[in-house]
Length: 469
Image 1 (cartoon, rainbow, N blue to C red):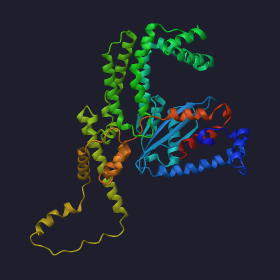
Image 2: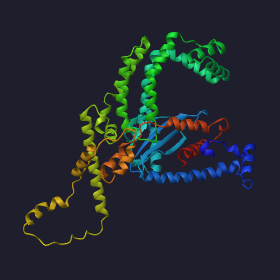
Image 3: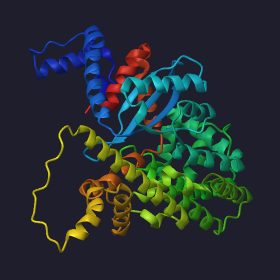
Image 4: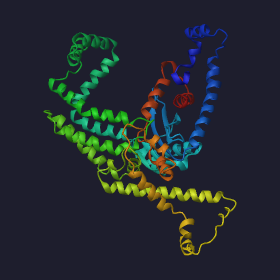
């Protein structure tokens, strides 16, 4: 309960909680705070960690996501999450660690910590990509660890939007001032709710509330109110996409190309709308320019193109450039062929006794010549041909509805496309860092009632909260 609901250890000393438990079961002996903190919590942490290790060890490939955060007690934390498709074809995203990081955030230090964690969990050679924000030290750390780096797509969208908002920075500053004041002031909050209920109008209620509770706050002109309305309409698709792409329980890599292209279309369409304010028009131009700069070659990003092609909802239909789809298909086919070759070699190495000869049949002089010429073709399998055939068969199948689960489709066909299934598990990875969720929860752990928790206790609680079934 303490780990899942972020209750303080001191709850076991609270009079109301003790009375509540006594009413439920008078015979129950409640452990004291010291027992929970020093004995029960570490035991549960060790138990759950071993269970998660077993699950992670069974993964054929993993994608890492990582970020850093500073708590209200000015303690720096680093979180590392692991994403993989398990044997039940479900995307699993356990938190590997959320620990105090006291060293300088240099690329060398970050890389060393990432390698240390991967070595501890036995996944160093299973990492297919590492997703971080766009900070230079993070990208350099992943390169030093010799993994493929992928920038957090949600963070990239955030950077695009923040750059565009510079064109209305004055208005944004005013809005922030009003929002921060109302959030801090209970009087202003209650006054705003009452005024909105009375007037039934949002804008007018805000203007009236500001005039009554704090006339010194910056006021927005009528033109600025119009601009805010336009900006909300423009940025709504970005908000929707950020929420969708940040889902850590669903495969997202296969969506990135489509979402990037569709966002560009939305912005181009909005540029044709009638926006009369010059700052809003400049903002629209900035959005279009930033997306073009960041997404112009997105179909050539191998990880994304292969993930998109291996999603039975999209396949080639997601590509504007047929050549990019063809290159992705060739790369996937080659990877599948390597899987088949590896499987055959492994199977051959495990064979200790020669296979018994096939039952002899009477030799027919009619078929003697053909049997001699066909002997090699029958006895020697060709992984490359098998992979090409599988890829053709996969691409020929009809698309499934966009709302269906692609992993369920692959689970049903794993016996048909064995090599492609193995490749798929290495491609349909996470594309956004779930750090906002992790660090938001960590912020709840370090509350007023638990501000003196040691970093090690925070580490245990964060791990248990993320990984308890």
